Image 1 (spheres, rainbow, N blue to C red):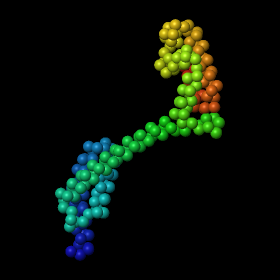
Image 2 (spheres, rainbow, N blue to C red):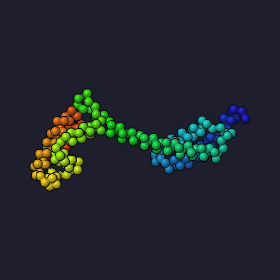
Image 3 (cartoon, rainbow, N blue to C red):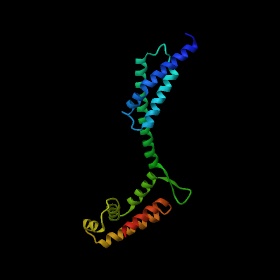
Image 4 (tube, rainbow, N blue to C red):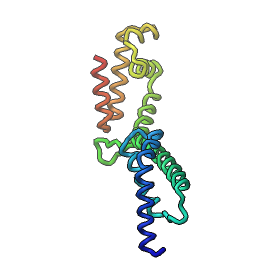
Length: 189
């Protein structure tokens, strides 16, 4: 068999293979991936790879079908794994995304700002820290906090205001924190 005949044989064999098995493999890929376009792309890529590697004399239909099935499954799983990595990276990046302070010399991540806030709160007297935590973290009302701590509602409000003043002064260079405290201040009143 000369080169031209082999080429025509390869084309004919591949066309028959593609026409017969493309749609079933797209349906098979649906077991792994919901997105139709992604599934079709994966199956097309596998068939393209088979076209590049195919040797008609060595490739029997059963072997080709099993090879394509394994390749489609593998690429679908790789796609899902890659998606998980992308989502994990996006979450990781979001937690560590730089936050720019008003001063251009400071760039902090959310984790660093959280540590700074935590450090400031640790320096507060116990009553003030507890009132801040109960109010802003546990979202309790001034009345609830006053009853739990056996103090007046005015004392709770005074401590909250004092803590807010301390935080505003300590974190005044941080634009996003200032915004956060502005929103928190609105919630207080």
